[in-house]
Image 1 (spheres, helix red, strand yellow):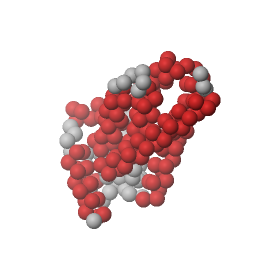
Image 2 (tube, rainbow, N blue to C red):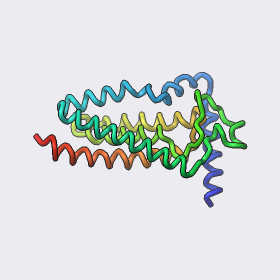
Image 3 (tube, rainbow, N blue to C red):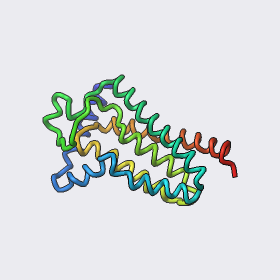
Image 4 (cartoon, rainbow, N blue to C red):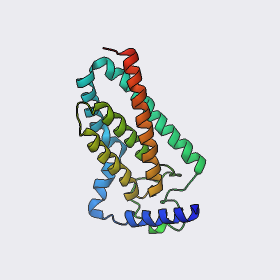
Length: 189
């Protein structure tokens, strides 16, 4: 059953990856580039400061740093444990892949880009929801775009993305709850 699921995963990857065209390659390379999201992060930090103040912002910077470190390190543990080769390294599929990423890491299960973007989307979206009701939907759309970009550039299978998104969602929610507790405990108004 697992073998069949992985085969479907490869087929879906090839289908989605081969939707790409040279016309869109640069767009998706920008989306997948990890530093492209810095302007969004700066806007979110500004919105947090504007609505919650300096003390809360400083505490949240620590919580956000812990969240990103946590999701990143757990992602690496999974990659090293499962050692699933990325599509750009997998025999029998690499020749069928549109690989346009600047590099190809060794293992791909699960996607760090997907988990980090989703944890940020959930954390910031829930935190700012009382002030910006629809922001969470914009952040989720951004997270899905970042996640899909990993398939487009040829470095992750759909299961890598799906598991990364789910893990990131759980991490974002957990750190949101931790942040809420810390705000109440240390920055009560």
